[in-house]
Length: 233
Image 1: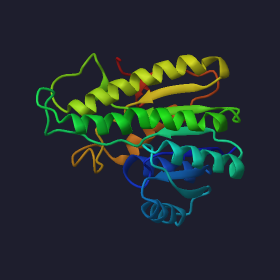
Image 2: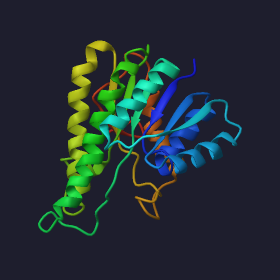
Image 3: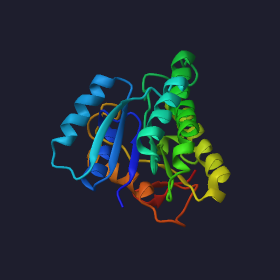
């Protein structure tokens, strides 16, 4: 059965590739984008690729709680459910900073999008996910958020991804009795606008995310993986 998938930050990079792969498999994809025009262009281009499913652009700014709730309400009326939520939107791979001299305004923006954005979007879409027989929530994280391997540099990114991992575990525990699978995924260093050149292909990173999306009922929850293999928290 085709799924209804919502992907945040999906007009480019990993989010766009996840949307493409899901549409190829026949899913209906809501391509969330802060810039609606950019989202519409991406959805149009993906729809021209001979996909079996449907790609629909939606304005989705994860920092705007009222806007997120309004979209969730509209999709409940139009689609009736959501099967998979991919919290992909993120900002600030801040290689120019150290924790000692960090611009806390930049850190605040990272926390607002990377953590609170995923949190408020999950809260808003829970009523739709509860209408699904197979609800899945995927937090697109990074090994940069692993306390086991974290070191110096990129403080806004490190701290926000570590907090996102904590949110994953807490949300997974709260929703376990309802049959939700809530997992964090590191797509690896990927050649995107944020990751820069030299990373692995975007399609490979997206497949890492797809692993958590495609888990069977009764599969693992509250995990942190890359390519389906565990990463230390």
